[in-house]
Image (cartoon, rainbow, N blue to C red; front, side, top):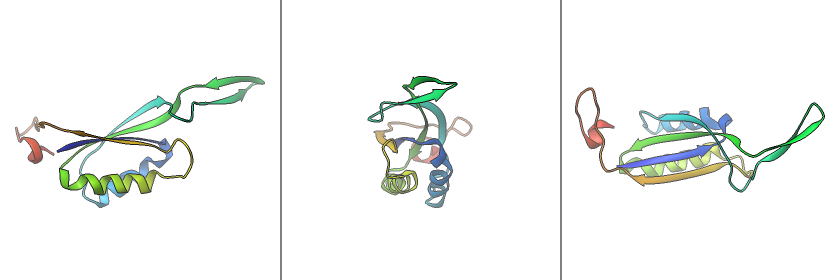
Length: 112
């Protein structure tokens, strides 16, 4: 089992969710986050004053997956979230040691 974490632009969330659904991903967790990478933020003008926006709005997606779906899920996210511009995001894959479905007590892959 793997835990896939993706940080993407907020307006790409629906495309990513639909693509993941098509390949059989049954559940995701989404969190609104702020951060920066190579983008390093940007400057904006508000009422004539210039100010720096250090942290940009992003969406963090967390998905617990069986090993067989990881590559497909990564491909879907890469294709769906890609704009070709800086700040499209990142994907991280971590090993998931154990999972338990609280309601039924099912464990590991059965719990996903």
